[in-house]
Length: 195
Length: 123
Image (cartoon, rainbow over all chains, first blue to last red; front, side, top):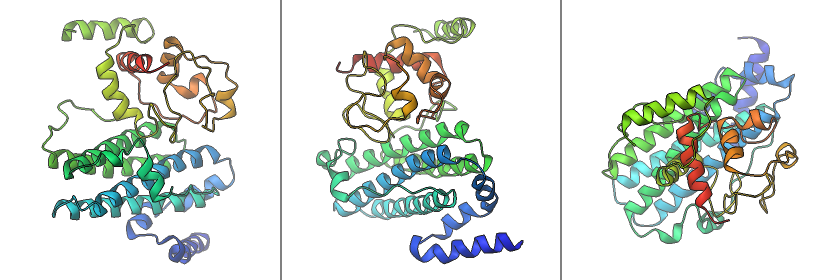
């Protein structure tokens, strides 16, 4: 490992206390020092903007699962799965924050819990049951799958495209599990995600 | 639409350069909108992308409360079905440098259905 690569890794680990980088986030970013080095010389504002949109979606998903977990409506083992999925969204968030910062950008912050609760998109006031929470989570996960797949062509950097693909895979797993928990049919057509 | 007719329609559209056909399926468009656009957009409120109420006939980059790119604000586009078709097929080709880099409506039939839904929203 080169000195610059070691230094870069050390910086990442040093910041771990501030960012609470999970093992998953570290794994996601492993090897992306080359990405940071490449981007440092050029304009990465477009990539940062795209990553920040993705980060906003992760903040929203974390908030939605938190609302679900605190609602008292989720029964075990559904509650455990919701907490697991939320932890994976937190790992995504940490990875995206770290990547944005490595590219020299400023990561967008989460909205307040109250703002998420007031959001028309989440429609928290309309939640009455475990099924309502699962439907909300399923809708958000599908949106995230398509958003991540949809930005892949926009990344000039193949490392960023790979990250988007890996994030989409996690969201697809969430969407599939939630769809089955709701007793809804799986997509019948091939290539049903993205376009 | 019968499958054979739909397939024929796709081929005709491909030969014509892939422009969305008029009279899309609004219900399918609603479902597509939720799945493909819903992460960033809604009809009622701004999110990562602007809200889509009162979209048709609106000048691009003018939805109140949304921070648009200078590229889109200065594009001079007015949202018609034809403009939306070109936008959805590749936003950055139509307006280079705008913030919407997602490509999620490559199929002309999908675009027609999305446009049918958006056209039915409040003006």
